[in-house]
Each structure stands twice: as C-alpha cells, then as structure tokens.
Length: 90
Image (cartoon, rainbow, N blue to C red):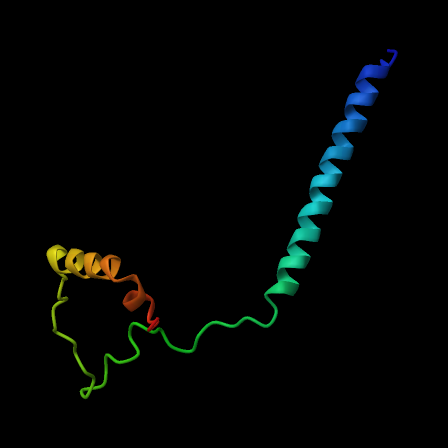
C-alpha cells in the first residue's frame, strides 16, 4: 500500500504540535517552580492564631453609618467656600 503525502504531512504536523505542547509544559513547570522556590507556607493560620488565648480582645462595637444629610451639608459647605476646602488662606 502506497503512503499518501497528505497522511505523512498530517502525522508529522501532529507530532510537531504535540512535541511543542509537551516542551512548553515542561518549560512552564520549570519557570513556575523557580519562581516559587523561596515561597513557604505560613507556620500558623491567621484565623486560629488567637483562639487559645484568653486575653484576646473581642470587638463587639457596631459600625456607625454616616447620615447622608450630614455628608451633603459638608459637601455643600466646601463647594460654597473653595479656599477653605483646599486649606489655603488666600
């Protein structure tokens, strides 16, 4: 049976593409490994760092929201007096 040139070229191109994929995978792995060489995991988890200590401060204060009316009054006052808003005394 005679080999057709299109089959040979297709198999050759496919093998080149697979080879390029394998080569780039190894190269990417090597670059990533080198980039992360000095990175280590933390010794303790930050969330559980203070769980065993009884003297830890527990913050129970709620967040205080600003009123929109107060904010608008401050902005209007700054717009009315631009020199005072910028901190200049001219």
